[in-house]
Structure formats: C-alpha cells, structure tokens
View: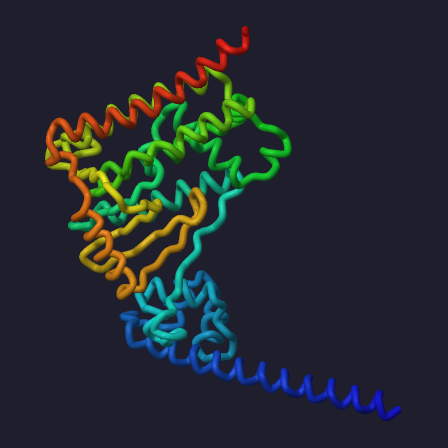
Length: 363
C-alpha cells in the first residue's frame, strides 16, 4: 500500500508540475499577443474600427476579431503570420525570438498532386505580378539546375518537367507506374495554361542568373533515368533533347541581347558563369523596400526568409559570387561560344546514348 501511495504522490506532483508549466506558457503567450496587438494598433491607419480591420484581414466575423483583439481568444500561428505580413511587422524583431543566431523562416506548401501544382503556379503568378510594378526590383538566381521559368513554355520539355516534379511528390504515380506518355494523355490543359502564364511573367522582371558547366546535367539525368526505366519513350526522349538544344540556343540569344523578352527597353537579363562556387537553386528577390531569400529544399518546395540582416548577409555573398564569375555578355565571343558549346555537347552525349541503345537492341 505504501508503494501505491508513493507512486500516486509522484504522479500527482508530475501533474501539478505540467499544469503549472502549461499555465506559464499560456501566460507568456497572452503577454506576447497583447504586445503584438498594441504594435498593430499603432500601425493601423483605419479611421473607423481596428476590430473591423482585423476581421477583414483574417476573413473572420466581427465578434471573433473582437475576442482576439481583447485577448479572449488566442491568435493561431497562421493568423499571427497573416497579420504580420499585412502590417509588415517583423516577428523576429518584435519578440527577439531565440538568440541572435535564430530567425523565422516560412516553409512553402508541399506539392503532391496536379491540383496542388496548378495552385502553386497560380499563387506564384499572383506573388510575381506586384513585383513587375516595382521599379528597381530584380532577381538573382543561383542555378544548380535550369531555372524553372525557362522550362515554362508550350513544349514537350515543359510537360516532361511537370511530369518529373509530380512523380517526385505523388507516390501513386510510382505505384501505378505512370509513364510520361500516360501522363500526357491525362494532363489537364489548365495546368499548362497556368505554367505558360507564369513563364511569361518572368520575362518582365530584371534577372541575374549564375550558371556553371553542370547546370544542364540534372535535367539530362532525368531524361536518361526515365528513358532507361521505360517510363519515357525513345522518340519523346530524343524530342526533349532537341528542345533542350533549342532552349540553350535561345538562352544564348537572350544573353547577348541582355533580355528574356527580346524587347529593347524591357526587363534586363544577365547571365554569369561561375568558375568554382557551388550553386544551389537559391533565389534572392531585391526591391527598394527590402530583400527576400528563397532556398529550395525539394524540387519546388523552399524556405522563405525575409529577415533583413540575414538577407543582407546572403546578398553580400551573392555579390561576391558574381564578382568572381564571368558576365558572359562581356566575356568575349570565344568564352561565350565555349560555354554554350559545352552544354550542347552534354545534350548530344545523352542523345547519342539514347540512339545507341536502340541500335544495341538488335545485336
């Protein structure tokens, strides 16, 4: 009996500890929410009702907004981020989260289905359109692989890239052994329409890209992999290689013209060749109002960082990377020809391998 009583006492003490611990967390969350609401009130320029403004931003009813403003209901993390974005408040700076080496990063939604990819194209276009109207906005792209927007055309290459992206995220496509040819038959036209619209929008933004001799390799490996696994027909594999050649030819013209659209006075395009730095499919968005950094961790998923001190550090590194790279338009005819010839040679090696396997089949 004494043993049972002793265990019961221990459990009671543990229960009291965790109850007090949760009460302490709730107390600090309430203080943080109160501080957050005070900051929002000072920023708000609504002359009628702060509560109505909060209700509009969060898309909730007046009563629900009233309870949040008056600390009767806790703000969810999603609601807090939504308000911080709307009022342009840095949560890092406001709450001094963690140490000076800790920042908040936003994770993009994972893409596993055709519908989710179509929504990604749609939301990306919605985020991109306002940047087209900001004078001085530019992108800096560290291209480990061919940048996504170069692939967003009405082409077989675009359809293949979409197939690869979805097959990486959708286990059912692997389980059902969906081939590229099957996917072409099932692919909704609206998905291509969204992709093409996003590709066109990029032509209106000033872009700096950093490539190296291996930037094309990832896409070529994908063609070989799906061809050799039987998920991509020989004809389509050869067609995709041909379209890659055409893409690189176009890229060379755009590099010399310093424009993706080919229009004089339009958005600028500058291609740099990195001699030794490792590239990582990272994107820096620079505007007069600030910087935002996107770091890919899967094909289309990324971490978004808008913590300005961190973005400033990354921006300085990218500037150093550009300084140690060759801007091809100024590199001279020989260097330009060598760079693009190496890429075409890599494409040709893969094309020959695909054709050779057809010949070996009859030996």
